[in-house]
Amino acid sequence: MRHRLFILFSLLALTLTVWACGAKKPPVKEPAIAETVTDAGADEDADAEPPAPKSLYERMGKREAIAKVVDTFMKNMMANKTVAKRFAKLKGPKLDAFKESFTDFVCKETGGDCEYKGKDMKEAHKGMKITEAEWNATVEALGAALEEHGVGKEEQADLVAALGKMREDIAPAPPAKK
Ligand code: HEM
Image (cartoon, rainbow, N blue to C red; front, side, top):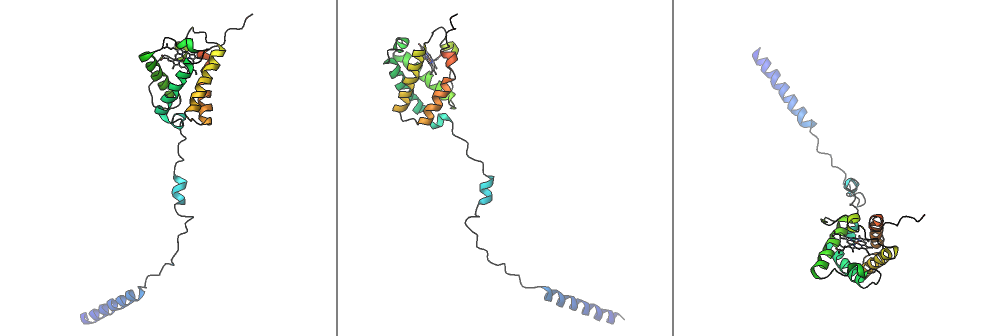
């Protein structure tokens, strides 16, 4: 009886081995797909963040470029008969400090990482009674300085627009006469 069972098991084992070997098929060869260049990296591009728009500060050439503009701007102001008298006392280290402060102000206002430690515009120009002619002469002096240093037209317009918003604080219109 035991002998028969042994033969039965042996036969079963042999059958299973043959069946298993026969079932093993050679791996199916994948057809070679040539990756098209147009598809390459398409998913990565879709996920990528669009580059952050550059600040006016960066577009103007950062602090060093702004400092050069401010230097020329002050030369223009000193040479302009409409506004020169306002800055008559600004000489030597005082003028240097003013230009530094003005540069920090423009840097900060245009999106740069500068610390402006001066007064706010209302306080800095308090009681000066700046006229329209003086305002226009200042904008002109700034425009000429920007042009001289090759600052782009778009950047010039953006800066003048940004500073123009401060006009009410710097040179408020006199109250209308009754
Ligand atoms: C584009 C507009 C202007 C801007 C952005 C501007 C900006 C400034 C800044 C940042 C200061 C320095 C404040 C501080 O350090 O505490 C200042 C001071 C001054 N600003 Fe203006 N300003 C403008 C227009 C004018 C105009 C139109 C005049 C007159 C013509 C003027 C006359 C002065 C004077 C006399 C001082 C004080 C200078 C001193 O320390 O003796 N500003 N301004």
